[in-house]
Length: 453
Image (cartoon, rainbow, N blue to C red; front, side, top):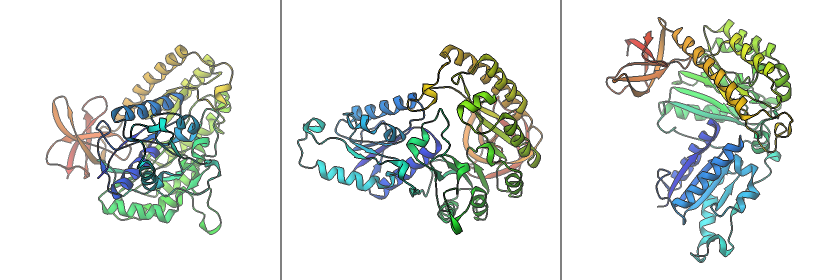
């Protein structure tokens, strides 16, 4: 029995694909071992969202080969798609697999092992048998790659990839070039996978994609279905109690969309609306295709139809050309909106994007100063939002044991993704608990006074 170790870098979509590839290997008879152990195959699902992500991908590939020089080191994913020619020359990498070839992992590996038999064991790459490449021009691929999962490792919620690719071409982003154009998974296939996950005991699913808001735009004619239609399908699956949405573009938040969602009791009032900047001039340079005023209107819509929804976002500081005045516009806009959580990123140059070639690159020290200001704001806003739940009756899906102040608790999340805990007892992982949130146990966790278990 061959052994395999997997390591994931990057987003939730990558995580889903790594889980799916692991299950393909298990079904083929491979035994999965921790990445730090010696294995016959090391698979790294790479990321390429920034130059730093590229470097981390290379580091993990080199670490794998160092752990076992005789192992087959497989690089898959976005960095492969962006730098296939470079990776072909890397002596630490034996097989490279592009973003539309992951489902073929097992036959690719078997072909590699067959081709290696009979070769000089000491010759290796220097003997001329080289790196095997399975990378195609993903921009020409219009088919969704069918990867499926039947379980999620050690989680109570299931992340479900329903869409791939992006047509937006933001000026700072390499993703459309390494993930290709929008490709959506057929809704009946998504529904079937959700049913299987429900049968396994999962009560919450999280819909993810490279550009989730674009789900269905590639469908035509009678096959046409959008994200709202997909959510309604999943809402009907017995056993599923919660539907959580991944990152959304502001433009999908129309009154019709929000009104329909608010009538679906399984939909979690937790909305991650990507912002990136609160300054219109910066948004234009980013090619974000909306204004701060439009974004504010979308947040107001969510708050009109949902009671105290969790609104979270991403913000980039130090984008090329961002002046002190533009940063102040962003800071004041964030204060105006008031978020539950903000993910603050210092702009990182990415070769191959328009932003990398823009003039007026912001010094790193200035980026750090601006980041610190927004992180302090985020901490204050997040605490205020959590405290607003004190005294509320709610339901918590329990997930894991935690220790707070020396005491043992069982912790989980509300629909809004606010963390709460109750005193530990018997194992209640993946159970719903009703009660009242009374006070803060620490900076991030509320105490749940349970009324019904």
